[in-house]
Image (cartoon, rainbow, N blue to C red; front, side, top):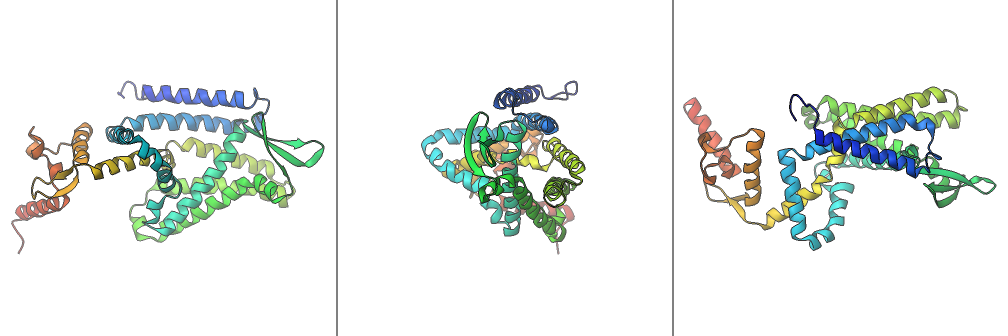
Length: 349
C-alpha cells in the first residue's frame, strides 16, 4: 500500500469476489429469491459488509512479513509429511479450534467463558446466516399446522412437530445461543473487573466486544419475551433495536477484537511448523554454545525482522550469521543486559 492508494488493491479484489459469491449464493440458494425474506435485507447488508471487511483484512494480514513467513512454513511443513499430517489434522482441529485446550491450561474460568461464547456464536451463525441468505426455511407438512419440514434451499430434510422437544429446540435455537453467549460474557466481565492480570492489560476494545455480544443477545431474548409473555407488545420497536445491534455488530466484526476468530485457524499451520522445528536441527548460542531453539525458527526470525524495520546484527554491521543478536540464547541475553546495565551505572555495590 502507498499514500496515494490507501487501500490494498489485492485485498479489495478478494473482498469483491467474496461479496459476489455471497450475492450469488443468496440468489441461487433462495431459489431466485423465492425464499428470501425482504424483512432481513438489513441483516443481508450487514453480512455483505462483514464479508468484504473480513476478507479484505485477512488478505492484508496474510501478506504481512511475519504472517506470510508462518503461512509459508506451515504449508511447507504440512506437505513434507502430508499423510501423517492429514491423520493428525482432526486432533489439531479439536484441540486448537474446538476445545481450545491451550486456554484451559492458562485458566479454567477463561476457557469456560471462551467455550460458552464460541459455541453460542457458532449456533447463532448456523441459524442466522442461512436464514438471512434464504438458504434455510420451514414449510408446513400437508394440512398439519403444527408439523414442519426443514428445507435447505430446495432440499427437504428433517420433519418435526412444533410442540415436541426437537421442535422447541429448533425454534428457540437463537435463544439458547444467546444464553450461552451471555453466560460467557458475564464470566469475562467478572474476570476483567477483578483479576489483576487482566486489569493490567485491559484495552477499551475488549469491553466493546463484550458490550456488542451482550447487546445482541439481550435484545434477541427480548423478542422472545415479547412474543411469548407480552402478547407481542413492543415487538416492532424491539425488533428494530435488535436488528440495529446485529447489523452494527457485523459491521464492527472486521475491525475489532473478534476478528481473531478468523485468524485462529492459522494456529494449525503454526502447530505443524513447531512440530517440524522440534524434529529439526537446533540453533546454537553464539555466547555459551548451548542449544536453545530451532535453527529454522531462528533463521526465519532473522529474515523477517529486517523487513519490519528491526536490525539485530551486532553493532549494526553487515556481518555474517554468527554476528546476529538472534543467535544468542535467552539466558545469555539476560546476562548481557545485566552486564550492560552494570557498566552503564558504574557497577553495583
